[in-house]
Image (cartoon, rainbow, N blue to C red):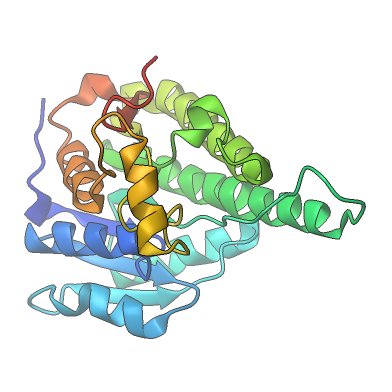
Length: 255
């Protein structure tokens, strides 16, 4: 059994301009990993996310992961920078799909974008990574999912988002089983409401506190917890966890 120090890892992290992605980049970077981050919008935030990574071991690629070809191009671009052995699938589209109303435009658009970005683009990138990792005999794929992918969305108009998260988790399980003997590990982290995530980004402070009070621990998941767990999984210290979904919600959802 081989444990991999994070200083030996080259990690591709999608969506580093967001709150969770920036913590992922900083955490892997602080452990000495070479970090290749992607962003679609928010160039300044993406730059800040990798600015603290020492020794010029942080790089950025602007990528729009909304179809299979875009995902394949990103994989090629990233490996032109360095030989990637860890993939963290963090970027996702959170688009409303209203359950009520006579206008179907938002419904159609929301499902289309959710499936293109969160499923087709993400799954294609994971497929490319798994093929490459199998050829070298090791590699980790870590999916940042959501508890909504486990139980459906508690917000009725985010049904497409929840369904897409369930789909990519299921595909991760398929990859884990298919490539287990080749040393490829696939893990899913399913956080609850994150302190600085998409679920609270547009809420007023009082509303954020109200959400927290309704949780078992009375607090949101700290985004740093997600980053630390992802970093641990990338070391391959618990290879038998491959295929698992790790719930990170402070006992607010148990299964």
